[in-house]
Amino acid sequence: MVEGSMTLDSLTAPVDWVKLWEDSYDDRSRIMLRDYEIDDWSERAEDYSESRRTNNYEFGELVYSTLALHEVVSPDSRVLEVGAGPGTFVIPFARKVDHITAVEPAEGMRRMISQNAAEAGVKNYDIIPKIWQDVNIEDLRGRYDLTISSTVIWMFRDIMTQINRMEEVTRGHCCVVGGVSIGQTFETELWKKIMGDVPYPQYPEYPLIYNLLYMHGRVPHVRLINYKSVRKLENMLRMYKVFYSIYTEVTPEVEKIIRDELYRDSGEGPCVRKYRSAVVWWNPAVRRKELNGIA
Image (tube, rainbow, N blue to C red; front, side):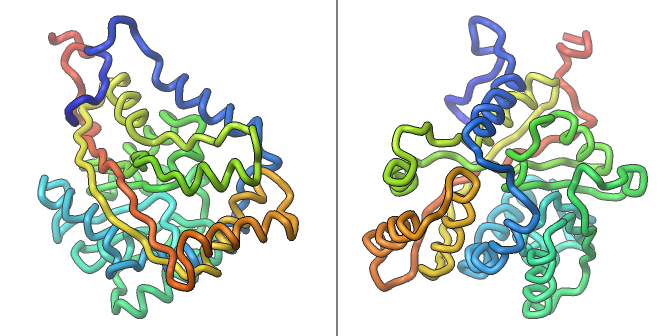
């Protein structure tokens, strides 16, 4: 448990963490012109792949090292990743585990997985070309030692339903890797220049995910990791254009604001971003005693 994190035991009144998650989802939805589409992720495949490949898949390597240190994953493990993107975990995990299955609906992302895997020389993976909600759990039940998800978890309003589905396919652990805010002012300042007084959308992952797991009887463990991504300016521009198209019309004026701000921030060089994430894992078979009446 991370020092300073809130749990039900530390609060004077019960908090419904799932409702907080749903409220954040609903608040975000109210200011969206449209929802994310699979084609959006295909359009972002190249820039997303570029960011995940930074420092030889530093992000995925750090997640694997964290889980391996705590004996959550090993060379014999079979792993399933929910929302695999361009191979965020497929490539670094495949180098070290027996097999990894990627659940990824976007054709562009699947293409990048295949391309990145070929470049890395890994073949011990397969891809399920569906959104997670459409995957038949009965086909996968108990087949994996670890089910892991990163980045897409905020897309599930029915968060506990999807977590339960993750648990059903594992015979070992589940893991969610969620973002931790480190106060990046570039994002909020760019949002104000484009969107004015419209509230900045929240993409809650940690510590909300930790507390809702705890609230539902799980015994989550957490470690924080720091990493960075490096991207070309044009790829960052494409990323922001897709992002802002969800909330407003991306006119030539809006595109110019994005380009000017990126140039002001990074100049002619690559765009470097520093991030912090929480690696949260739990064993579905282990539940808090007091919720089982054994306190």
